[in-house]
Length: 108
Image (cartoon, rainbow, N blue to C red; front, side):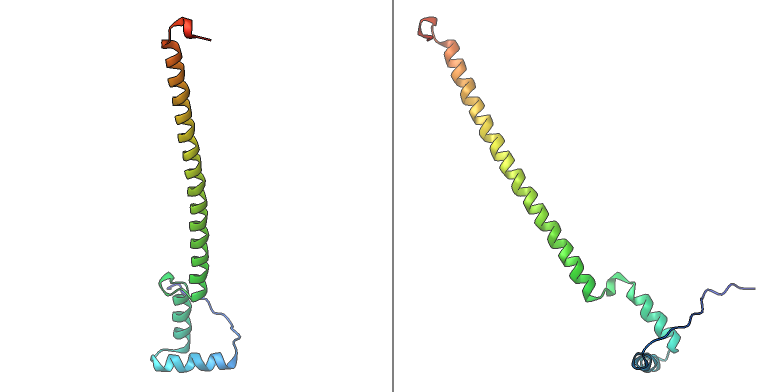
């Protein structure tokens, strides 16, 4: 005996929606059930995502880009600070080398 792949369910839907489903099923030469199943399956397909999904994804993308920009700005400031500190350290080191090379009589 083969196993039934389907689950039966009772569904309450508005009459005008039922009418649209029946009409569309007839246009496509499908049963109303097949039309409903096809539409439900399509709703889970990312390629046919609904506009709300795109809006949500756009907002998430914008948040990620904004956060990346903030992080990039912070890192750029940190790099500038470090480069300035390196330059200051070089100056101090050069002054120290000059001091060490000076004759001892000039050390005051």
